[in-house]
Each structure stands twice: as C-alpha cells, then as structure tokens.
Image: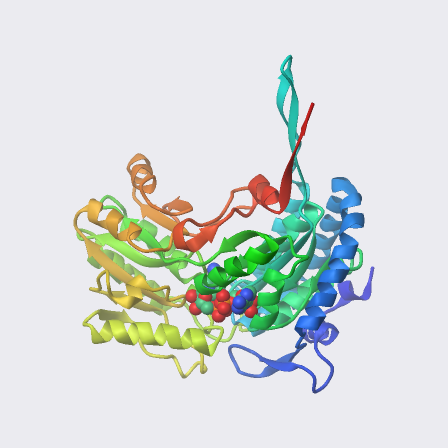
Length: 475
Ligand code: TXE
C-alpha cells in the first residue's frame, strides 16, 4: 500500500498538501485559534491550468467504463477509511466540529458511504419505444468537466456529494473548497488521488475570484455548488457564458411543526439534534420551530434541559458533542440575531451570550421563546446554535408561516398520527419533509431544494443523472 494509507496523524496529512513555507495562508483551529497549517493560495492562472488538465484527462476516464471506474472509486472509499481518524482530527480542528457525536468521525464515515453508493448505483439505458413504430432508448453520458464549489460547514461530505457521482459518470472534476476549510478537503482529495489516475480530480485552493472563474470558465460543463443564495445567483449569471448546467444547494430556513398530539418527551431529542447538529451550521437543520400552544411550554423546557446538558467545547476532547462557530463572520451573524430578538422582547430561555470561557468563537445553545414571524432570528438563516420557538394555535397558521419565506430546502412535522403528519407534510413547500425527525439523509434518497434553496437533485439515480447529459438513440 502507498505511504498515505500509513499516515497516522493529521499533521502528516497537512504536510502533504500545505503551501511551501511563507507562501500560504494561515488556517486556524476553530476552537483554539492555533495555526494548523498554511493553505496554498492558488490563482486564476492555476485554475485555468487545472481545468485544461482535467479536460485532457476526461475522455480516457470516461473510456474506462463504469465497471473500472466503480472499482477505482471503491478503492478510494477504502483509502478514506484507512485514513479516517487523521482526517476526522484535521476536520475537527479546521471546521470545529467535535470528533464525537454526529460530527467529524460521522462525516468521514459518510464520505466512504456516499462514495461507495455512487460507485455502485446502476443507471441502465431506458428503452422508451420498441415496437412497430420504431425504437428509442435514453441513456446518460458524461457531461465533461465538473466544477465543484464547496462550503465550510460539512466540507468533506459535501465535496464527496459533488465529486463522487461526477467521477462515477465519467466526468473529471476540479474542486474548489471554501477558503475557510481548505486543508481538510485538500487532504481528502490527496487521499482519493492515491488511487485515481492523474488529473481526474484536481483541487484548487482559492477564494471568491477563483470560484467565480470556475463557474464561468468556457471549459466547465457543469457546476455543483453548495453555499449562500447570493453566491448562487452570481453562479447563475456566470453560467450565461458557458451554459454550464447547474446544481445549486443554497441553504435554507427549515421550519418544523409540532402538532397538538405529539409527545414532547419522545420528540425532544430529535428536535434538538435536528436543530443543533454541527452546532446548527447545517443547511437542512431545523431553524424555526412552530409548536402548538397546548405543548409549547413543555417542548421549550425539554429543549432547554437538553441544551444545558449537552457538552460543548474543543472538538478533540472526546466528551464534547457541540463545538464553536467555524468563523468570525458566522459567529457575528448568530450573536446579532440573538441580541436583536432579545431587544424585541423575546425570551432567552437558555444561552444567549457568547461562551467566551470556552474560546473566542463559542456561542452556547440558545433557546428563544415567545418570538414571532417577522423577527430576523425567525426570518433569516441563523446557521448556528440558536433556535426560535414560535407558538401557534391553528395548524393552518403554522403551515402558512412555514411556507411564507423564500427558502425551501427541508421541513418537518412532528406527531403521533403519521397520516395526519403526512397530510401536513404534503402542503409544505420544501424539497424534503421529514416526519418525527429532521435532516436525516440517505445516499439513495434524492436531496435538493425548491424556491430560494436552489434547484437540482443530489444522491441516488437522480444524482447520477444530474452530472450527466441525456442522449436518445433512435431508429
Ligand atoms: O458562503 P459563500 P459563505 C450560508 C450561511 C452563511 C452564508 C455565507 O448562511 O452565513 O451562506 O457563507 C465560493 N462564484 N451557507 O460566505 O460565499 C466560496 O469561495 C463562485 C449555507 O461561506 O456562498 C466558497 O467556496 N464561487 C451553506 C463557496 O462559494 C464563489 C453552507 C461558498 O461561499 C463566489 C455555507 C463566486 N462569485 C454557508 N463567491 C449551505 N447550503 O449549507 C464565493 N464563492
């Protein structure tokens, strides 16, 4: 086996991908502020070179066929697993999420799972007509070079969601990680490249200028993007020139509705992790919770109890399951929204002020009660550990509230009556509606948003189709 599979700690992973001394940008441990390493600062010229190499490598990669590509991708998944612990440690330090709980180790495990699934999901040609009128079949071919632009919240998992189906379908990929979390993605790509042929997957570590060029480059055929709605709009504009196909996952402001027949004790933990997985920095997290008046106080109290009991701190400490905000910008957004809600008379049940004793970017889990639609903490995406809980008396009002914002990624309904919950679910404007849970994903179940949360589907057969072009052969 190659040397990378013998790597034992995260510093060795960083050493393989970081910039030469004095040429990079310091990347800090989100929890402690310590410097982890120096990210290379790639330029637009570096990106152009990477795209040219990826384009040159694409025909041979497609020519290998599904079987051989699947074999290589399965070997790449094994390589991730062989390096799981150092990758998880690097991710934990750079992103902030703890090793334990549904966090860094979980994320690295999901990378291997999603990669294997993309490698092995069949996508057979579909015979559409085969009779006296003629013959026609529909199949899916590689689209070409895919640009993968990633965020900082689940940097490894989301990169794999973008990269794996594209490679499987015979595309080559140029990936640009977020400038906040480049090292872990560079390390992941380095590990994958131990088994992939040269130039099939290239990571370019740059900022917004590099992202903008990647989305609009004439030799990019498809862009997979996860990030903010504002950047998504810019990518759409950029694609007017190259006509790149787009998959845009633009975050959300997911509503949860607790129906009057729900059992607060039974749902409290599901609600808590639905909202606070990755310390709330998750696109499809529960971001505003509508609770029927009859259960309101009980649900708020149960959430506050869990908030107080759930350990937050430095991610490498195995006891912690909640971490810091990843960056100052996000910390400031969360603080501003919580302060603003308090100033408008909302009740801060627990949390509410920075946990400076833990470190600069820590904000405690904050449950905000007696708050209403129209307050920015409800209407804007907080993307952090603060949950507004809104009281309702008529379920029609709760449905209208859930649907009133531009976002449409996920939603959830909580009830002991599954049929009643499904009826409400069908009326919610969201790409996924969970019942008695929030945010659970499966590699075979398509995921994507509606309205301002973007368009296009990831995962499963639909995900493979989205990084391919349909071709009809007729006659
Ligand atoms: O996102 P950006 P940021 C939300 C969350 C957060 C906000 C901003 O609410 O507060 O977005 O986060 C690249 N053309 N989400 O600033 O700017 C950029 O370099 C092409 C939700 O990190 O959208 C990075 O790689 N690319 C989200 C990526 O886009 C460009 C997860 C995302 O950056 C570009 C993260 C351009 N013009 C934040 N400008 C989710 N859906 O989960 C920047 N980029």
